[in-house]
Length: 149
View (spheres, rainbow, N blue to C red):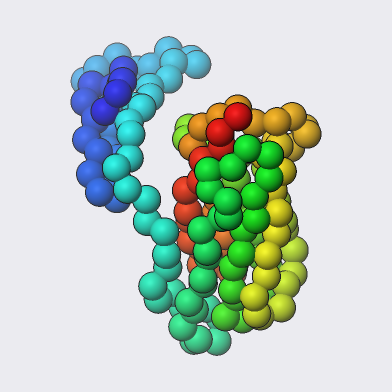
C-alpha cells in the first residue's frame, strides 16, 4: 500500500478491502471520500473457463501487444471463440478509462487492432504502464503494456 486515508486497508492477491467507517462513528461529511493507492506485483492475464450463453466454454486468447514497450503505436491481437459484442478498452494504473479502441459486434476468429497511444480526445498519453481489457459477452481478460516516450 502506497497511501490510504482509510482507517485500515488490506490488499491481497485478488481483492482490496478498506475499512472507512465503524458503527458509532460520526457520518461522513457531504463529499468526503476515502482512497487507497497500492501497487500490484502481478496481473491476471487470461480467462481459463467462463461460460458463454448457450453453455459453451470460452477461451478468449488475448496476445501481448507488439511492440511492448512502444512509443507511437502498438498492435493488439486476439482470438474470439464465438462471435458477439466485443469491447477493447485501455486503462491507466489508476483504473481510469483512457480509450475505447473498439466496441461492437465481431465474428469468431482471429482479429488485430492498432492503438496509436492516444486518449479519447486524441492527445498522446504519457509514458507509463497501461492495461488493456478485452470483453466478449460476460467474459474478459486483461494484459499490461508500457508506453515509453
